[in-house]
Image (cartoon, rainbow, N blue to C red; front, side, top):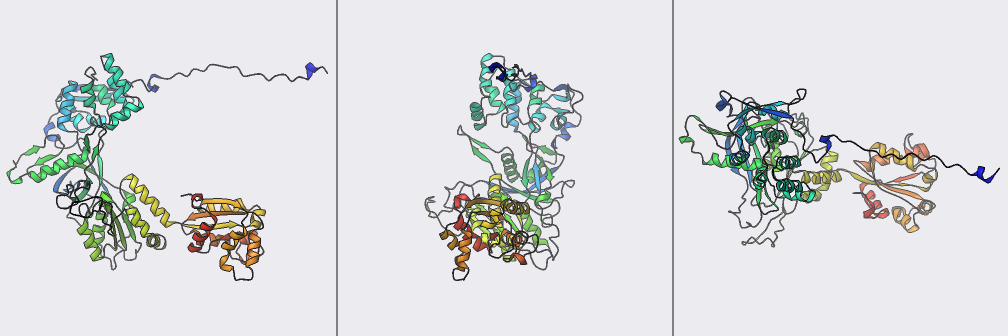
Length: 608
């Protein structure tokens, strides 16, 4: 055989091809989507003046019965005026008879409009006739109009922009594309396109630049009515927790609480919340109205959906049920005894006011055990519902009340460097940690129901704290005989399938010093030396389990010390015969688990 024939022929190489991916025009992020609707002008709708007393979003109107500030935001009555305190407002309302059923824990949706002044300026800049009535249809007859566009049908441009379209909120990149596309001057077009870059767009968002701001800045841009309506999103309602119970208040009444949102922007300006500032303005109007001098005829409150009707100011709303946040079923029965834990910092306490109102009306032989954690900045200036909570505590409706105020100060000058270390100082999560043992007993031993309400970040923090309090950790060691038999995977599988979490694991040959410390409680026993000798004779797999009741459950799954007496199905019952070689060790108590985990693992080796 020649050398040439012994050479292996090279394998054929794949043919290289240039692949070109074609995109549709709409898939290109730099291209403005085509307009999908057609706008037609129509004659004025008859009786529209009557229809305008109701919101386009909701036919239900709630009458304001009471408006009050729950906080001393300016520090007018206290020395610690240097502490920034939010305005918190409670509004009591009379609900529409057709939308008046709710449970404690439910929400109320408020439909707040864009301001009249802003809309007037916007429509003037766009050269749109505010009094023109329009209809909207889909260009593609097979495609249904979006809900908010259906609502626009048969209404005036002014009303559509005021009540339906989100034209004063955060600018989307679609809007930027729209403005650039309809700019007649190249300089404006290029400048608007630059705003779409990540850095410039973040600045735009940070300064809360509005659509009107951009239109005033770029004079040549003139988007048409149809494409602008198609591009703008819907104005969303705002949800607020109801802070009352129908069983406690007169029929059809409800209360809700909110804090006035004020955000300092990157340009130094202060932005107020869309709905909260509107509600405050209505409340101020309510307080200033001299009802005795009002005309009998209905009066439209300019710049809002709210109407002043002879002796009332109303706001559009809908009720929103939250089945996951109601009091437990059967709570009125004397046989129900599970405690209730409520965690509500700031205005997150609102639904729990409704809970406690409801509990105060129940005819139970013995009140339920209840525990409320409430926190804010200042005990003097923003302790919401203090009198109510203290009265419920005195009457036994509220078993435990734990408060935390993070910015308490002393001294007539209000010096924020002089901290008053009162028992109420601190944060809610710190108070929970201080009471962790008792909380654990309520949760684990008495099967308490836990409710947490607040902003997303705070709720996540408190949920994690509660989780850590409601679970145990146990130390487990697969001894040298278990490792030699290849049982590590089987043992881990059993615990994980049970639902326990492995938060630390390592394999090692224990030193004599470690073994003696581990078995130190048996130091005076005759078999101490045998225990130490065996566990140091080969590799051991040590791990930490986490879960509810894991100490007792893990021991039950292990079986008794003597494998011959262990039930089938337990680890020792299935895999061991001798007491001296019984496969596995598990902590026998929570205290032992803590000691053994600290002995075998460093803190940084444990998952949090």
